[in-house]
Image (cartoon, rainbow, N blue to C red):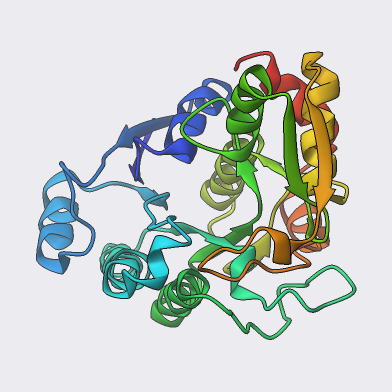
Length: 288
């Protein structure tokens, strides 16, 4: 059994990994959070790796408060850039693979076709910029490390759009949701299973060069408004959901208007089958 370090283990994706891990008995996932391992402290990271000798690392730790990042830039870069760099350097020193999770916010959202991994990054928020620097730190440290970008993450765990919409639909007669931002919701449990499948492939075929950047989200395209309407339909809520434009719902951080990711690379490289977003939403809602 392989010991796999999971940083950010108490977050949404960390909890999703706990659920997905049942299908991967060859892995012993060791979950840590900042109270056990402060990844922004390179000395602490080095000491942890020397003492515990993990055989791979999945980095789920991230500063994800998109709007707060606009005024907490230093905190965002400490975790999303410096923390990623410290883990990348430790994994490289111990010659073990690192899987690092990133975001669609590294793009400016002005594309009209799904983003490929090779497309230029151009973030328009502090959060996106910090995640872009983190990606560069990981791949720049070792080209064999893996970055997986995702979008619109939700689950039955933590705080996210799907859980919040279901709660609000039980409290309010009407909701306004933006309709001019397109992307794909990603069920965190699906992403977690994909990460473990990538790790299995890497462990079984260590000679194969699979490092670099990959995209993962569920299949299909939708808007936040249509996402909310789907939640309404699947839960039987009676709340009236109305579409509004983004300018009617201003936020400190600019959201990409188009966040659709091309997933051909991850599917062909690792043989991953990706569920349609509505099917995964229906599964998730059973557990909220």
